[in-house]
Amino acid sequence: MKTPEGSRRFWIGVASRDHAMQGVVGGFAQLCHGKATPLLRMVPGDGLVYYSPRERFGESAPCQRFVAIGRITGSAVYPFDMGRGFVPFRRDAAYVRGAVEAPVRPLLPLLTFVRDPAHWGAVFRFGFLEITSSDFSRIARAMEVYDERV
Image (cartoon, rainbow, N blue to C red; front, side, top):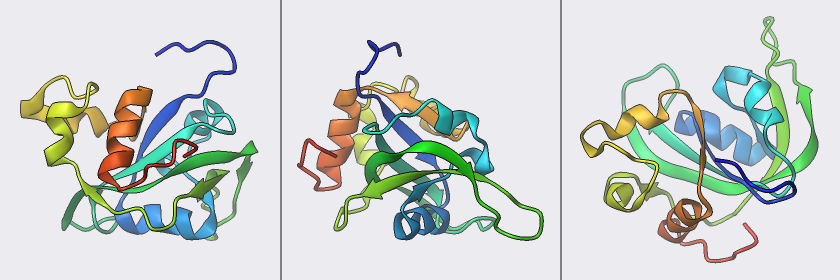
């Protein structure tokens, strides 16, 4: 989705709920198992919402909710050493405290990026996607976030 230079963009990151919550607590975004490329597409002020297909990384318990919403605040993408040779890339982000987790299924008919309702999960398989401001607003409202500055 092309936007004019300097325009705000909106993104969905896909992560297990436990990993998304680490970002909320730590004030950072980390996507696609720590790859820098998705974060390099973002700029400060861009909106970010996390969708969690699973509750915990590596486990099968489903979550299927939007679990965090906020905006990118950091101008730099930086490596972060998590130990044991794992050095993912991060970017600073601020999340809305008190946002309510929103189940994805009731939103499916309203979201324009879901092209095939029978296979709605396929859109999330790459771990990162750009969405319209309208879709971001729909998700924000479902999360009981009404502040347009998010």
